[in-house]
Amino acid sequence: MEEKYIVSIDQSTQGTKALLFDEKGRLCMRADLPHRQIVNSQGWVSHDGEEIYRNTIRVIKEVLDRAKVSPGHVAGIGISNQRETAILWERKTGLPAGEAVVWQCARAAEICRRDKIADLSAQIKCRTGLKLSPYFTAAKICWLLENVEGAEEKAKQHDICHGTMDSYLIYRLTRGEVYATDYSNASRTQLFNIFTLEWDKEICECFGIDAGNLPEVRDSNACFGYTDCGGIFPEPVPIHGVMGDSHAALFGQNCRLAGMTKVTYGTGSSIMMNIGGHPVLSGNGLVTSLAWGINGKPEYVLEGNLNYTGAVISWLKDNMQMIGDASETEGLADMANKDDSLYLLPAFTGLGAPYWDSDAKAAIVGMDRTTGKAEIVRAALESIAYQITDIVRAMEKDSGKQIKTLKVDGGPTKNRYLMQFQSDIADCDVCISKVEELSGTGAAFMAGMELGLWQGEIFDTIKWDKVFPEMEVDVRRQKYDGYTNAVDRIKTR
Image 1 (cartoon, rainbow, N blue to C red):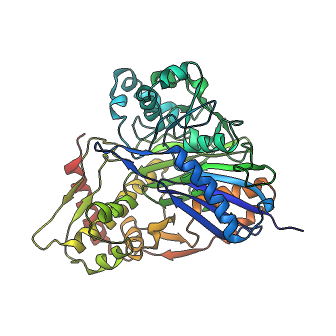
Image 2 (cartoon, rainbow, N blue to C red):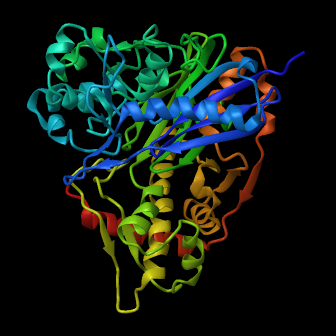
Image 3 (cartoon, one colour):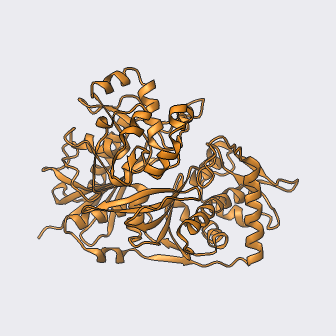
């Protein structure tokens, strides 16, 4: 009997990966390609959708070639994707209409300040679970429709599709046969009513968007059509297991019970707490989203999002040229003056959750004559943990539950200094997944479960290393108080 495989596509901010899983749920091969980060003089961040689609096809072919697996042995495909990034494409050709506006980009801030939108902000929060912000997809789609030549007129004729990267890739992979998204991605657009589980027509109209032009919303484990991936597969295979990357990581971490919490460290970070089958609106600066929908049953999360976590390290390397590689940060942090009280606040595109201050500016607070490169690098690392701790504290207030364990994943979790400081400053155990690719793994697990390759025991294949708090209570309180005082200096509201 021939072995069956699952291919998981992880389309992230920096690049696109193809992950190959065997029948035992083991990751046996990966292939990835970066795509351009298109940043203009105004700091706007864009992606080329056509480049991303081409890379998707290339990495699928490459992962099969490397593993020497026949394409005919692939049972299905899962997709995890960068969220909130907005893209327009031609309905007839599938080709992008302009560049995608990346989730990090705040170019649509002015749209959120318009009277007709700002006046609806309370209702937007109550219906979508999301605080009005240019971070989410709605304002980005509005900006694209207004600024891509001919887009508004084509939208009126229903000749334009718009959505998040999952719906774009599904459309391209199925050659335009399926125009759909899943509950997790829909819930991040700021256009989806998380209570009625439908596109909210009033909110869509407020942003100048025709709800009829938005994709169909399906369960995350539903079939999203069939694809031969540009001729790679001899027969089309089904697409199942479609989720935003953070939701897929939550699933891959087996946080399927209410109260379980995880952190995905990436370019930005997503902190999620599973809150079960009923939505709870946050009173502490968090947002409420759908974790996923499975077989007609939606589940919800409280979530806090941060724009600059891993991206802070990229800033040290690419902009400040303080390091040549991210791996250098751990050693420099250990070398830094232990008595230094430096705080780096990476509000390069404003403060995200729980402050939601898009006008705040980044700052370094607490420098003295002895401050050097090592201290700045350490402060950059610690800024990641401080921001995440802000979210953890807000979740505890909203849920009434103390978070004793954080399950974590993503590239920065390899940094020993960061993980220990995270455990210390948040005062909780940190469980570091030994599987780095949790977003792609979550999508693969869901696809494989739906296709009958495995059952719930598949989650037993994920193992963790544990880090425990070591910092004294007084030191923890002093450091965190210093951080919150520094944040107060840069807040504009």
